[in-house]
Length: 158
Image 1: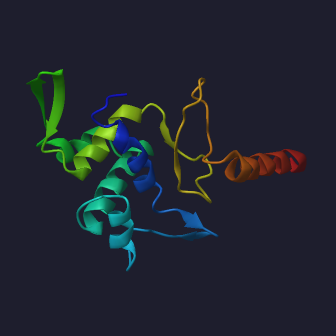
Image 2 (image 1 turned 120 degrees about the horizontal axis):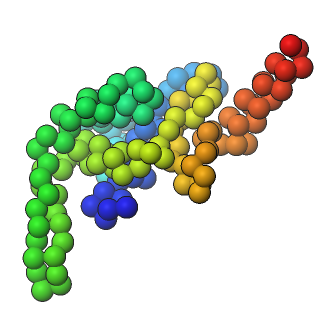
């Protein structure tokens, strides 16, 4: 993973998971009085509306509801610049505000980032780090067990 955005991958996952379903009720950490504090705690600059916009855009791409091209507007002004020093050559991003960093982090993990398959009760995302890249649920102990139990009951009643 590129060191340019690897630190942003965890932050992207937190951002995507900021709108979970809790006890059957959709919630959103980026709405209401606690939104600014939520962003500040994570070092995400800007207003909650901007964070919601990029979160929803990346989530739509991950869920297959929008094309990856829809993210272009967030990275339009980003440039990669080479910096040569006594320590060698390194790359620096210019113009990479948080929305651009979120999109660049998505690009690093897009083949392993997916929504939990329990989409009726869960709106969380996961990064599958398993060797087989076959993880399907945010948590086997909650979503995985629920779906497996439902499928088992459905088979018994068919």
